[in-house]
Image (cartoon, rainbow, N blue to C red):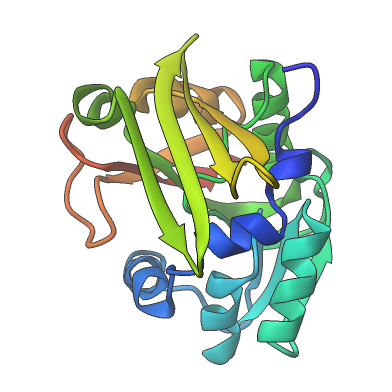
Length: 240
């Protein structure tokens, strides 16, 4: 990975492929956060790697003070057009700062970097940006589930008349995806790769950066985590 893949991927073609994501899907996790965290209306909330800001919109619509940050200028621009009035801005997740009561990392917006030290830098930044006893909500895929069900797969589909080919495979402790969009006469290729942290590795990373894991869920309905769970959702509290 000579070049960081995410600098190219989150553009208009990303929006095309994931246009099916809707508020109903985001609403499941939003409702879980409200139920389990019970954030106060006066809290400052950060939506880290917010994309277009689906989750930020839901919180803002309920009267919460939320800011969304994302590295992609394309996604931030699209979010501002789609959800006028949201506080969205471009920022690298490794460079966050501020004083927040709740920081959210949703829908596997973590593990992007080639060097694990960079992922740990993100968590260190989360710790430093939280107020005393502040909370961090991390939503990540369950590596055990991926290994058992999606070790290697490929698909071809047509979205708005555009051919999209995807190949997913595990290599080097990472889940990798090659995406080809368009025909041979005008195709564009992308690469996506995320480190496959286990539940225990994520917990260790939180603990070593001053964050105590207080709850663990296995899906967006709030089920207890099991090895067969699709997600690893950690609720962490800053240790003062």
